[in-house]
Each structure stands twice: as C-alpha cells, then as structure tokens.
Image 1 (cartoon, rainbow, N blue to C red):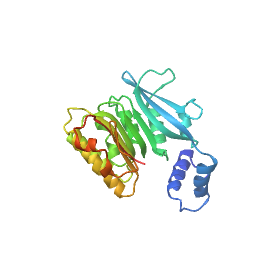
Image 2 (cartoon, rainbow, N blue to C red; image 1 turned 90 degrees about the vertical axis):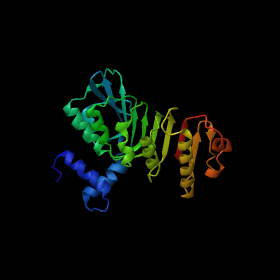
Image 3 (cartoon, one colour; image 1 turned 120 degrees about the vertical axis):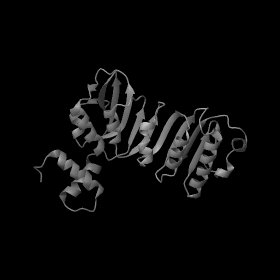
Image 4 (cartoon, rainbow, N blue to C red; image 1 turned 45 degrees about the vertical axis):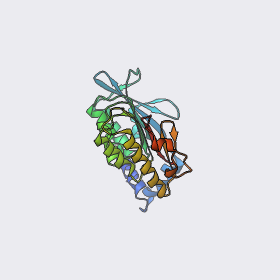
Length: 259
C-alpha cells in the first residue's frame, strides 16, 4: 500500500482521523504522526480580484513566507484563513484551472476550522466555489454590503461566529439570524443595523435579549452588548440595564457572545 499515489494516501489518512476506531499501521500513523509529531503549519490563502482576473497568494503564518501551489499538496500545511479582496500583489499568481483544482482540494481536506474575511466580492464563480469547499468555519467576517451568497454557512451550521458589519435587516435576514443563534455550535454574532431596516432595532434587540436569557438558562456564560449598553456577563438577562430595556434605543450596533 506504500506504493499508491500520495494524494490517495493522504485522503485515507484524513478519513482515518475521523474514524479513530480503525486498527492497523495507517490508523496509528494518521492519528499520532499528524497530531503530535508533525503539527501542520498554518496557511493564509489570499483570493484577489484584479480587474476581471482572479489571482491568489498562499502564505505561511509561521514564517511569513509566500508558498508555491505545490506546498498545498503536503500534509505539513493546513488552511487557517481565507481573505477575499480587491488589490494588486506583485507576488500573486493567476488562478488558472490547475490552481483552482489544487486549491479546492487543499481547502476541502483541511481538518481545522477556517476563518474567512471578505473585504470585497464580485460574485466570481470560481471564488464562490472555493469558499463553498470549506468543511467548517470558525468565524466569518463580512466587510461588504451584499452577503446573500454567504448565508449558506449559516444555514448549514458550518460556522460558529459571524461579524456582518452594517446590514439592512430585512425579514429574511432576521429569520436567518434567528435560526443561526439557535445553532448548538453558535458562538457569536455582531452587526450594525441600517436605520431604515424593515425590522426595527427594538424588535431585534428584544429577540437577542430573550435569546441571551435562554442561553443562560442552558448554563452557558453569555454576553450581550448594544452600543454603549453592556450586559454584565455575571448577571442574568433580566438584569440588563433598564435604560436599554425601557427607553428608545439610540444605537444600531449589537453583539451577542457565548463564552
């Protein structure tokens, strides 16, 4: 079996990492060698919109060095963060078909949770496909207004934390956020509402306050912030500052965190 292609070997090892009750040398090698003897180096993947072209750059976080496409075939590297933005990087490479297929395989094989930061996005199908290949997200940060293409991780429970920046709180978006906070893996949600949103700030705040109380009743240490109005994480939701519960809300910024 040592003569089979390396990509097949790594695919089997990744499967064995998830099925640790398997016996044999491959199972021991997959678990002990990968986790303890050779911890993977963390990688940042930059997806860059340069006019109509898409470019990429692969960077090792430990050494701050730019990596070649071939490095992603090695099990000693693992994806940490994906950044999507518009810029010009002299060292960036063209995202051709070979690079696309290699990067998609690298992304789909990652075993750790991935952070994604979206600075800009022009709905490029290749970029969208690469992002959809991520098995699990630790957090997603949106720094743009159009987020309809990135709700899938929320709906499929692939992400724990989301920071939306400024959003127009439509009825649909409110339903998605409500469902997201019910996710057993939910960790945090942060956003600032546009003032002329379909859903009022009061409605959203009251929902988050009610959700805070439910999280606390489940024994989870939770925290809610609304503008400068902060809930003491050591108190119950019912003890949220009265000026935030009773008066007109003056801030559209909200942050719910499960510690």
